[in-house]
Amino acid sequence: MQDLLSQRQSLSAELTRLLGVRDDLTAELSRIESDVAIVDARASRDAERLAATTSPKDAQGLEHELASLAKRKSDLEDAELAVMERLETAESEVSAQEALIAAVNDEGARLSADGKTAVAEATARHETASRDRAAIAATLPADLVGLYERLSARGVGAALLRDRTCEGCRMVLAGTDLQTIRQAADDDVVNCPECGCVLVRTDEPHP
Image (tube, rainbow, N blue to C red; front, top):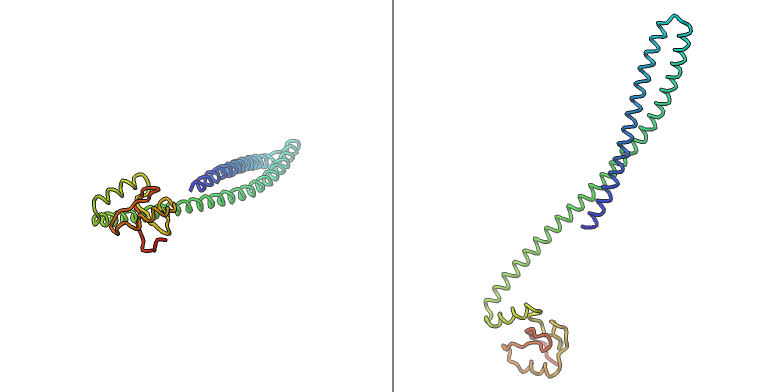
């Protein structure tokens, strides 16, 4: 989950950069469009003045200015087209980045939901185990339950004795200890001589 958060931060930083590029291009396009409008307005005014003038000198000046304005408009339109192409690319990159972030967010939401489900299932298993433990403990002698709880508070409370080995501490018991355990009655409580936990004896023969 931490990796997803780090990835989302990185993707968000890149999205901020891409949005900045897009906004700059949008502003540049607006400026060019404004310049084109100014050129068109001036050309229209000069065309009206040219149609109304009777002075050859004024007419020549207006014609020269109209030619300059036409060249200026052509240059602006070329620049406008180039910016529009760059803006289209920038918008596509922003959309792609937003899609990546959305995918990461979806994955985060899925992991969060899975985590909540896992916690709920673990809680349910714990509650079931606690009820089962309480039911079993109620059938056992109180002193045995108390001993187990004291032992489990500091380590392993009980463990199987299997193949001469205490599964609580994984120590192989000495022959004399095994002999003592073999001689104990079936209902006697025997403890591991190494870790002290209650040994649960199985039906396997002791060597």
